[in-house]
Length: 485
Image (cartoon, rainbow, N blue to C red; front, top):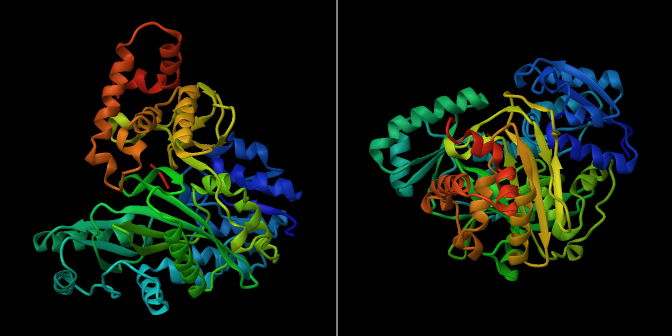
């Protein structure tokens, strides 16, 4: 096994990885910015080192400082978590050249899957079902116009190196093309250092379904079932569940095999996620995230498999503990991302000091968090406070359990999106499992959140209302005045 692991990340994911290390008896190292000096993950680690000022480019994205710190403290493994450098093949290569195990996939697989154009070509050659489109970088506006006519409007312009919902733009007709292409190329160059852009057919109102895969260095590869991630805003996920209401057992097996084929084609090992769009019984491979996903706990909840533990075992050269026939989903799990955001102000980040923090508990409740009462949420990073993970015997009971947990969750001092989750859990379309990626705008969910908050403010008396008000007090208090992975 690895002898010491440095976690090149922060917040709840850093704590999550350190917990897995502790169960193996592996000492852990935290690296932190000046803004995170009092963070929970810094307190949790066996060792901790400040690596720079608050802005990520001066700390968590400073590859030279991270490698130097790992060498000085004697870490033989680096876990990148998600975000930051988790999918950066250059950083993975720097780890390898310095004799440090990058707890993730091999560099060639990262490079292939990091390019949406190259990965799409490889997937087509392997027989993976992909979104209709072309596998070439657009040379100019004229070529983009010609390709769009071939594919048929509406289309999606996509940055080849994009990710996290960044670098995607819908184009409805030729009149929008020139301006949209210029805009997305500029964004891609500034965000990823690569202005390559290609075209895919825009699939109207699909469901977003992803398959968790994990493989070892000995050629064994399994999928660990699917997660539905269709509740999104700006292409970023807010609520995830497993299993998906849309899949039959036969489709689950078929798409899972496609996910494994995609991963094997890339020469992949360690944990990763193959993302698919699904509509009218048809599915299309979208991309592969070469890292552990934010929503991995719900897969753990229904299968009992500790994915972070498996990552550590794979990185240490061990074989997987499971074969495909061992993977059995039991019950239903839902994850809500609790963010310091204001849903009444278009989900604007709302950093600040947490005055009161009380987590829900009871059967089937798991909280992954990196905060505590008195912690100051920095303005430099994503706005996640915690992940609420709920398991129950079936979906209706899981929804009711989420509602109860949201009612218990108490956070004050910062605005949160708890009212958003409360509205969704009580919404008929969500409860019927008939939603897709356009769910939030199509059903006016934000407007319903505003109405909900106003009704709570107007309500009077009763201990239950008082408790509910406390759980969303920060949002209500700030309603008059008024980012994700």
